[in-house]
Length: 609
Image 1 (cartoon, rainbow, N blue to C red):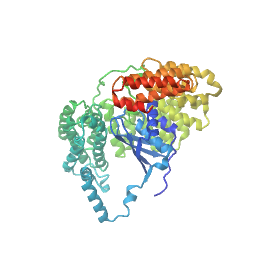
Image 2 (image 1 turned 60 degrees about the vertical axis):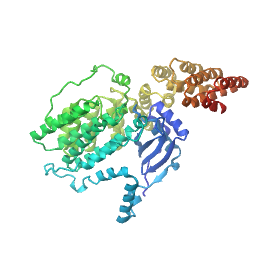
Image 3 (image 1 turned 90 degrees about the vertical axis):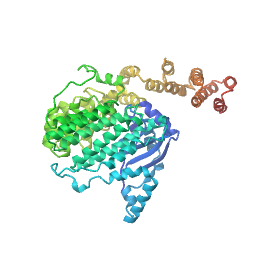
Image 4 (image 1 turned 60 degrees about the horizontal axis):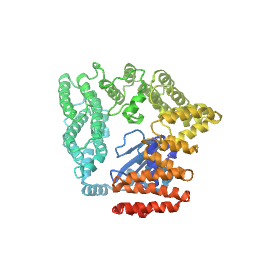
């Protein structure tokens, strides 16, 4: 196996992709040994991480020369950035890469086997793992590479959808053996398997067989609907997935050569499916219906439903209110978003044109529909970089679009142009944390300290952390005295008080940190952070705070809370010892044992103190 170069992972790189809470909790999981079965295959990390609601979650991360290309986890986290389980896996690799089992690529692993040996191996696998049968059966229906690019006017054939019907049914019922409370946490994995069926349809579409792709997607939607009642989709994962299938279906329909009668029949069938799925809150088939009704003709535009956002309103505040983060949306839209069906249909048309290599038509449609980011990215791919940069500087309107164009330019080796677009992005609307965190290190590496400082300040105002604070302080140099008050004012306004507490502790402002921890409704991790740091400096306060936290947990009479209560009592013990009051601690501990002598689970925890 040839050598594969992977950029060295650092805590700073990992932290940049996660919010502070996820990073801190992920670090705790890593330090607690929660990651198991860690392996690396090529550039892909995989492993299992302990979970709160499930014994473990499956985690994957793909690396490249630039660091972390993508990461996924089977947990339900959906609040922007990496979840704590992803953070734990990445930290495990960053700190101890040699502990990851090296797995050979499948082709290399199987290369030396004869046809008979491969047949025997697959036969044994299917007998011992019958759940794989439907997956293999559907994989065998996929188009051969030789049919790619066949004419869209080729004779349409009726494929056997029974294979896909069985596959989807098996997936939809794969959680039947679980208790409802357990199955809830595995819906994400279920939708991941359903997405494999969707990708099968895309393989047919890429091979020029849009008719087969259509039949697969219709089967997927119908069977998913029929199995919906068996799934607890309280978190909306299955509904969001099926909404996303609607856009893929629109691409397929636009790739078909349908006459008017066929389009009307298809639109009618889709209307019926849309009505059925509407009972479950799935609205994503609207774009597919529009594709069937209007094809490549321009559809009449309607005003989008829902709350209108005034032009001068701060969109980031509205996103904050709803709990959205930058990373909730994909590069060209997600399975659900603020987009109208018209915008989704435009995306589908652009995807079809790109797939078919109709570059001129693609660029014309981008300009007509205001898809300026895609226009600029396509110009880059056509080696028309100067035009792409000029267009981006003039027409991009939000920071995350500037970030995507900057990253693409950097991949093309156009670092100077990437920086130019990134700096422009800091002046655009929208959230700028991700752009600032990307641009800051790039500017500093080029020796552009003031520009790096500006980028990090933009990131800090939206996603503050101790690490970013320290970076800003270092870059400010002699200007720090003037900037500190502005930075702290921004930090004090932030809703999450964890970074504020960490910064105050870093600056040794003990009493100010205590004031933050004593605020009404302060999150327990804030109190914990302050208490851990102040044992040597404010032991009296640590004793009071720790005992309060412990007793608040104990009175709930839930045995699963007793270990956390014991942790708080350990802090109280350390503070008593630091202040030379060991006898008082022993007396208090004895009182607890006597007061709760009828709680054996708690007594077991107290005995360890």
